[in-house]
Amino acid sequence: MKLKKQSMGLKGLGRGMPMGMPEEVGKGGMQDTEGIIKRIQALKEKRNAVILAHNYQLPEVQDIADFQGDSFELARKATTLKEEVVVFCGVDFMAESTKILSPSKTVLLAEKEATCPMAGMVDAESLLLFRKNHPDIEAVVSYVNTTAEVKAVSDICCTSSSAVRIVKAIPAKKILFVPDTNLGRWVASQVPEKEIVLWPGFCPTHVNCIEPSDIIGLKKEHPSALVMAHPECTEEVVELADAVLSTSQMLSFAKESRAEEFIVATESGMAYALQKKHPHKKFYPVEKAICPNMKKTTLASILRALETNTYEINLSRETIEKARLPLEKMLQA
Image: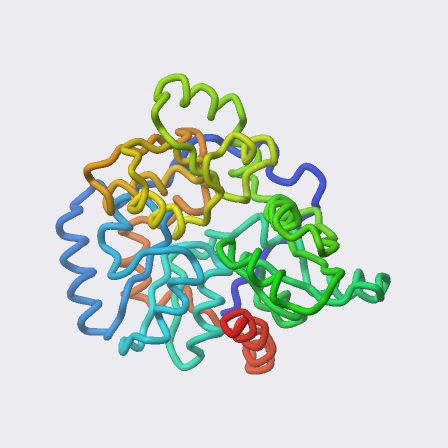
């Protein structure tokens, strides 16, 4: 089945989102964990499957994954793997990107309710209408945090790590950046020679759950720590950062830096991913920065996906072909 997103308005979207984990988080993960893990491993082998997990997932999900990373890094990784079934532990647009780049594989989203509010803040119809009403827009650059349908009507895609490079590389001078206002604003500050029109979208977790006071408070507790902030954070938080980085860049920055302590201004699960990679350094997350959707996937979710072949991502051939083009342009830019 095609996983459909709910229609969402832009005004106030994400306000009042619960700060803690949903009640269902962890169910099945604590009960008979060892048995569930053994069943997952056996089914993986039987079904010729691989498990991919985003850096924001629960620790036990990150631990059981064959590969973990940022969304597009994982989608690209899937293209190199021999396994025929991909269980994606993340949110819906990430699994869609994997299907777009690996259309012959069976791609399963471990939790069908794991949606992305930011991706839901733009749809293809609205984007096409905006462009029709603004003929001076020369190109649409879409963040990978968008639906397959939005990618299909975009000129080129970007990741948070490649956004600045992509905008610099394309010849267009007036660009519509979709959907994240904060990432778009960061890009505009780095590429002042171009005019960036910002779509009014945002990540509720980065905007509502990471405030300047959180960073200032952590800095007082850990004065030697460097602040790493994701560009989806607000401008006020970004201004407090020592480095503005994607999740994959955070992993590299922590490795290469002489610093031993880091404040991590992104979804809190990233601190676990960083600690795993760099056990001799210390990472301090903003504890309340929890994405409920990212935390919906449990070990039980993965087991169910492998047992029942749910929830399979199905996209039309036309959508795959059209959405693949801006992704390929991104890789070539």
